Image 1 (cartoon, rainbow, N blue to C red):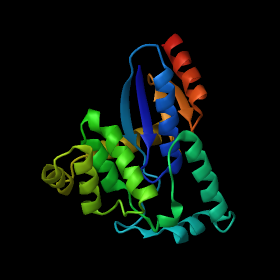
Image 2: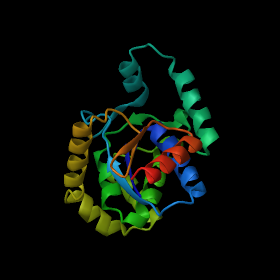
Image 3: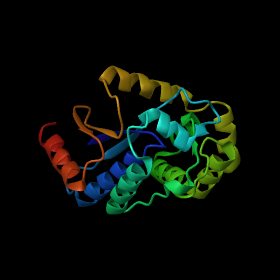
Length: 208
């Protein structure tokens, strides 16, 4: 079964959804699965250096929500899924093209560990994941060669795949993430609980 996961590296619900999906896969006893990570840029208009995080979030929601209450809700949902968030450390909203490039150029075996380390760097350590050196640290810790990764990122490796993913998502009408597509036909939108992902896997297996 092919599982395509559309996500962005600054999306907390993508991290929660990933954790829940992987819990579901741990329970899954059906056919083998192949995971394909796809890029979805939540805001590609951000400058390369990013913008202040809380100001950006306040502008995005127009003062309609209590940011601390919202971050608390996300933190609690993350804890239930087994992942940690510390929004008190997050100071920048980065442009995520470079971090998504890193995921694209990582080998299939390293993509999920790279995603998790990017998420941890951003959501737990408050690091600016638009900075090349931060991403090179992430890559090295995940098992990638630092200098080879630097050369690839500086040469623009992965950009073409990102553009293809963006075009595919636009054509498919995908407007938010996380968004999971099973066998190219069945969609699961949002950070669903593990049992919902299990039901979706069973449905896709029975109808493919």
